[in-house]
Length: 344
Ligand SMILES: Cc1cc2nc3c(=O)[nH]c(=O)nc-3n(C[C@H](O)[C@H](O)[C@H](O)COP(=O)(O)O)c2cc1C
Figure 1 (cartoon, rainbow, N blue to C red):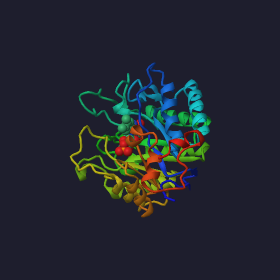
Figure 2 (figure 1 turned 60 degrees about the vertical axis):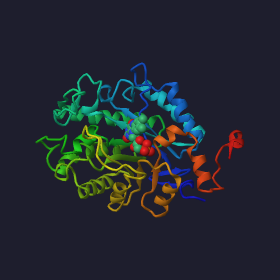
Figure 3 (figure 1 turned 135 degrees about the horizontal axis):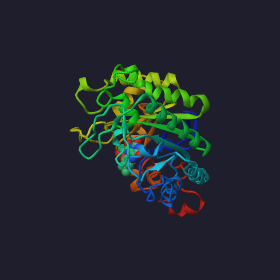
Figure 4 (figure 1 turned 120 degrees about the vertical axis):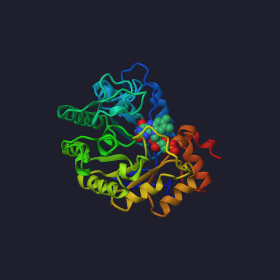
């Protein structure tokens, strides 16, 4: 049996396989209320029927002004939490583990009335200039992460992922590109880490379940204008010591630039491997990993612990069934009962 499609216990989770559906915003909330719609139920349900081991529900905002757009999901009120619970129940019924990514867009919250960021630096001409957060505002947004985590836990999710990547608020605190504060939340690496450190510490007061973070390991900026890989390894060790159970490694999004880099299958894997060398918690790779053979090789060689398939799962809800065929994995039960006759 392939490693990709075999069960695994890690990061306090018992998964049916090592395929993760990474968070992907669908912008399908049409009423601007942040609530899950029938689209989300069908969209995630199809991937659960397709046997994805862990589904991470898309970036979900912790405050209305933390949404990237008004079409995003939110988790700042109890109606949103109730609908989340119904979705989580149905995905559990279909056999997948379910997580949710909690986010605040900071300066990239396009529809925000009052966008906040560590420093008043605009992302691009298409965005408003954000307000530099006061210490009170820092506290309020941290508290919003805590309240959203409580709602997600009550809704029954198996894991929580803090969105620390792609240039959103947590990432804005971590990156010297976007954090030019002179108080205890800016300057040194330790100070820039403080915003997320305090969130994690408070979550750990009431939640001992699986807590992940997604990081962008490069801003695609000149070396002397961004955290070095060594500094990210330091952050990785701090995160582990502070109670993070799994690191989900991506890149980019801090700057409004299309990086001039070769993009090939597994192009972000070296960053995940660099972090894996620094920590003992599991590490997830993502980015053009649609080829099941490539995934299997990354797992067999111990480079990473889980693989996330994003656009591949958008194109094909039955990606795992095709992976089983590619990998000649006879033991993986591709479909449940009524779907069995669809097997190739
Ligand atoms: C439509 C779409 C929406 C996305 N939304 C999110 C998101 O909500 N949170 C996040 O961390 N990444 C998001 N991403 C990035 C994906 O999670 C993933 O990292 C990226 O697509 C690379 O993986 P892939 O090559 O397998 O698609 C999104 C990507 C796509 C295509």
